[in-house]
Length: 119
Image (cartoon, rainbow, N blue to C red; front, side, top):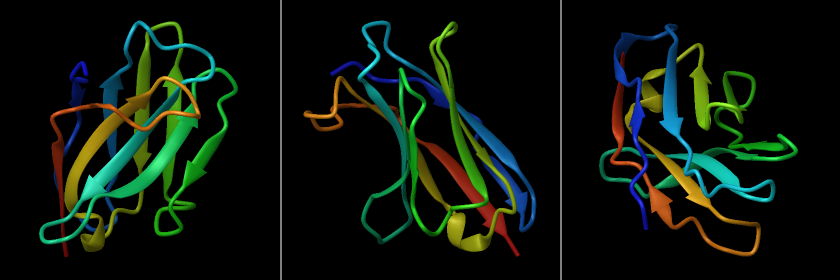
């Protein structure tokens, strides 16, 4: 469906931080879910984190727990991924995604933003 606009990627050294930002669709409702996914070169696309729009309930991949924080601004229709203590293995293209509710699949995606972490 609609393409989401995301930004905030870049090239940083290990231990640094980045914050990714994404515009949420205006049709988003309380039961909707926004997520961040990433795909490293030669690997499959994996879930990084999700957040339910209304309740703020979150999920995280084990690999990023304690380092990444997903949040949303319901007034401004934004979702963020605060990435701290970045490691080279976090290097990937990061995608923002949206699904209308818990019963659907993620169907709207951003164009991807590159995050590169050097050692």
